[in-house]
Image (cartoon, rainbow, N blue to C red; front, side):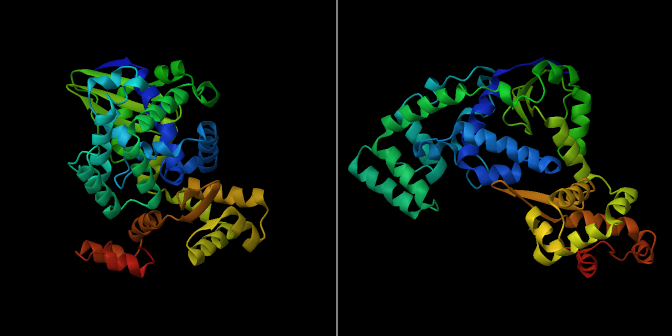
Length: 360
C-alpha cells in the first residue's frame, strides 16, 4: 500500500500558474474548468480571481496562453514530471536566463526554430517563422516584443509571478486544508476517479504525495515522479467528482421522470432544441418566466443531467445533453420491441438508430 504524504508546494505552484492562465484564457477556463452542477457559483469564483490578478502585462502572453493541446509554456517548463514539483517555486528561477527562455518560447510556439535572434540572419529566420505560424496577431506581436528585448520580458515575468504569489488565498477558501486532509481516502479517490473513466491506481508501493489547490478549485490530476506519484486536487474536487460521476452513470428513470413531468420543463427543452442553446434571459423572455422560476427549472434539469452548460463571460448557456437522452433511449429500449431486434443481433444502439430517434 502506498504511503500518503501531504505537501503544499505543488498546489501553490499550480495555483500561481492558474491565475495567469485564467487571465489570458478566460473563455476557455469558464468553459472547461467549471463544475457544470455549480456553473453560476464557479463562474463567479473565477470572475473574482480574474479581477484579482488584473491587469497583467501583454508580455506574459507567450508564457500563459494555452496552445491547441490545452497547455501553456510555463506549465510545460515548470510543471512537468520531476522531483522539483515537490519543492517551493522561486519566480527568480523560472528560467536560468534569457537564452533558456528564448529557446523554450521558440520550441513551444514555433516548433523549435534553430536560429539565434541576436544575429541578423537568425532574427530574419525567426521573423519569417512567426509570420508563417498559425499564431494570431496578438501573439505574433508579443513574440516580436520578447525577441526585441528579452531581458525586459524576463524581468516582467519574474516581477508578475512575485506579484501573483502575494494574492491572498484565504478569501477563496471553501474548505480548510486540515478538513481536506482529514477527508482524504486514497482507495475511495481511486475508485471514484476510475468510475469517471480515468482509471488510476494509488495502491502501488511507493509514496503518493497529495497537494491541494485553492484557486484551481476543480482540478484533479496525477503526475508520476519516478516510483512515486503526485496527486493534485482542487479544494472542491469531491463536488467535481460527483458531477463527473453523474455524467457517466446509467440514467435513473425515476429521476428523469420527475424532471420531465412538468410542462414548463418540456417547454424549456423545446426552446433549447429550436435554438441550440439558450441563456436564462432567453427562457425568461420567451416563456415569460420569472428569473427565480427559470433558474429553479434549469437547476432541476441540470441535476437530472438532461441539459449541460457552458460559460461565456458572466453568462451561462444551456444546451441539451444528447448523450443523456441516448442513454435514456437505450434504457427504455428494453421495454419495447427494439430490444427484440437487438437480441437478434440488430444494432439497435447504432448510429442510424440514434439518428432516427433524434440522437447525434
